[in-house]
Image 1 (tube, chains in turn cyan, orange):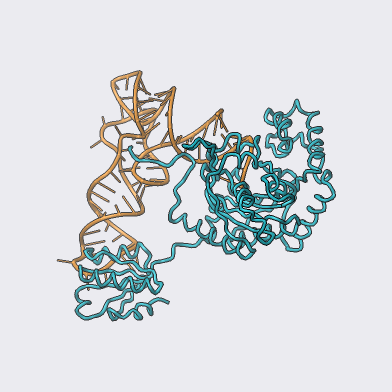
Image 2 (spheres, helix red, strand yellow):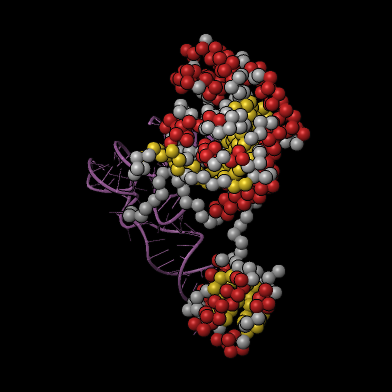
Length: 419
RNA sequence: GUGAGCAUAGCUCAAUUGGUUAGAGCACUGGACUGUGGCUCCAGGGGCUGGGGGUUCAAGUCCCCUUGUUCACCCCA
């Protein structure tokens, strides 16, 4: 075995799987454009600080999952583990706040996290994400969730649930956090070992521990909405009202706290039951302080989300994925002269926008037929010596075997074959 | 990083309590049909049974190690 294999947790994507991916990408571009988003492309590598400062030093992502290394110049560099940090860096670096507000961007591309692969989780995975800068109002939250809704509908993906939550802002989160700490401190002895650490480092994450014992302890937990300040409470209520107006169904899930430190107020996930343990297909939220923390204009509120491509593609497996566009005509030349004629006919047809394939002149007709069939061609155009002598070609429709003749150089007659 | 399962042809899988030459379907190539595909029939190529070591008269099968993979935990898209 001297063959090379892919690295652990990365994958080649090709036909027919690639058509599902293209459908998702094409549809997302279309829908996002309708909502006023324009594409943004940022590098896959950044200074490591771009990620550690935004995502949070104590999160799992930067703590143990980043591909980090020094380049030949000794610069500390990381492969991006997610998209938002780079977009924010780009926004600040290029003073994009000077564009008409709010600014809307979407991106697509590969992300990297050093994790143990499992269903729906890879070391190189792909996201389509969108970000809006410069609007604090819940209208943007609702609009974004509506955009997601439209995308899912267009892709024929049902069976998903939109879950929303609010985790407060700089003003009210400390109160809430203190209440959580107080609540669990009494029960610390009964918490799992992970949660004992969380109690000190990141108490919010006590909320979504899956350990049964911890889940039981959560009974009687102070309710998050009770601790939101008036502004955050108002924001959250307004969002829910707008979602109702737009007839977007959702459930409130006070346990959504997200694993990245930059989130404020609205957080949300689109979940499914079809992906094993990885139920989040799309996730995102507000990050009203991050732009300022990156040195951008103060009080630049922002919100964004990311779609997991691999997970999305898996959901589409039974759904209406676009198939490879069929080759409409297959040219079957018999002999060198016929091959040359076929080749130039093919070029003419391609210039007219018709997808055609040209076989090789030294194949038997039987081989040609088999190949045409395998490529799903609608018609085979047979050109042998007899045809050349008569100045015409023989066409055969593969679906029913009907045959006819066409003038050898009359492009219109080939075009006419195609419905 | 932790735990469990699985590695046999390109793919999906067989192979009695350990037993002699490791099989089948699909796919591929050729033929039946020398200028006509799909369906059918026939034939052919393909394997160090993931790798290494051990037990045994005998190992695809049992044991150990290793690598890969799958699923789950942590966490996340």
